[in-house]
Image (tube, rainbow, N blue to C red; front, side):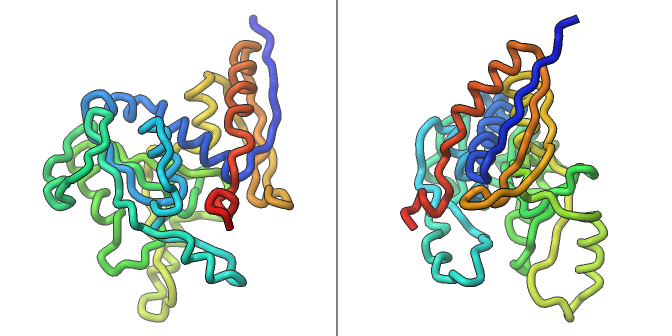
Length: 257
């Protein structure tokens, strides 16, 4: 029997997002849709990384953001981010420059992929949560029904820093009970095809990965400590992969803040 090898490392939030994006690009449903289907990448900081990995080129990720959480002491930083770049549609792996958003819904079919990064992750229950501010239900409402009705894939790229304490389904129920007394967003919880740093490592190297700790300081706030376990060859692939993503600049550095 082949002896197991181990590699333990930490990833900042930005490094984790880059790794997750590489994992999404390697998901079987995504690789199939890149060849002969349609992929819709909705806007978010994490999805910006995904779009770059799918296109194989950089985009202005600061202009591919809708909802955002920023430090309460620095509300001015919200102006650094915008939704100027529309959600991206790829057909056969090529970016569609001009499309009718309403017609797009009718054109989507079985096997196509919607990429929607969540705000919360309940890893144990395999569900994700989306903060909903729009009375229409926003992007989740726009696509989730089509995913179920047409047998499409609802892919949720999500860094481990978004794991929440407790039961996400119960949290959503309690917020719903608040009704008109609730001030702030509601929480839409749904199963999804989740890709965290752990799934990304498995997809890209074949090694098993587990999170063993979290947190950090001086730019590593929200970091994840991960141990990968596998054959010597798999762990060597993990080392190469992690070296590739480490050093990814945090968003504030990326936009020159």
